[in-house]
Length: 126
Image (cartoon, rainbow, N blue to C red):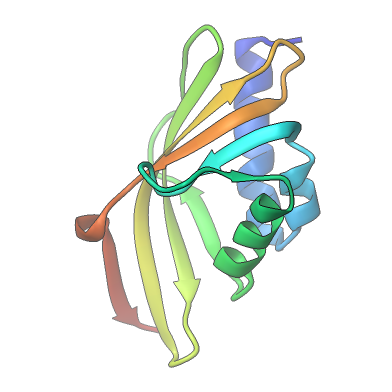
């Protein structure tokens, strides 16, 4: 059932799954027909493309954390977070993102859109 508490729990599960490197747990939050547009304006990913995207993006032991409260509406949740992604050269890419989850009536994520651009990405030494 789609409630504000369920949407908050889904965001919390998403953050925890990424931090644990458990991309199957991330996938379990999505509907079978879900789309992921990350970043906004790029071609939507579907099906196995979503798993491949998360595996590629977070395979380097990324750490993510909420940087503000989750904003919840009737069937969507928007949340700001910071992702710190280790690079092969020993540096860390820091990305400030706002994700929006749009939910289906059963409480699964039907669409995710990530909002960030070049001004939201920085690289620092580890």
